[in-house]
Length: 167
Image 1 (cartoon, rainbow, N blue to C red):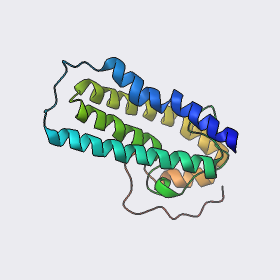
Image 2: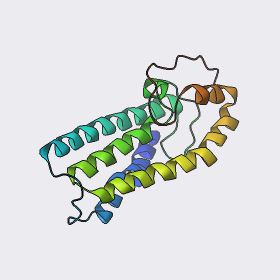
Image 3: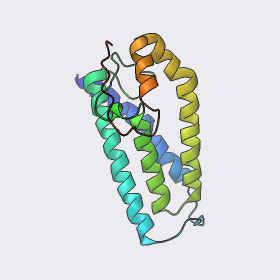
């Protein structure tokens, strides 16, 4: 159990930290002030960062507790997780990271970080379409296929998915 948390810390340092901190720091241009510079943008950005980080942290907890794996593709989950925010969308962890990136673009008034956000979602969409979803379909079979048909990839559904799965 202790080693799984160490793997989470390692994988968080590699993936979401790179996506939300290192890459934005590398691409941020203080002269790029394409977005309105209003205090409401900064407050909204802070709220989005808190919301996104909260979803992210909760999903890491779920991966550890129920999935018996980490967020990284090289650490496959042993069980299909369909609880918490996973009842509303299939990839709440990535949605949470996206909210953090949008929040950063608002705080720094940066169109460049916003463009990075769209690139991040495009890369992940392609990865999910061509690699992760086919792998999950093979690993969890009809349970995942039913889940995929009923729960959207990014934007949450209005009501929680209550389908019973055998995975």
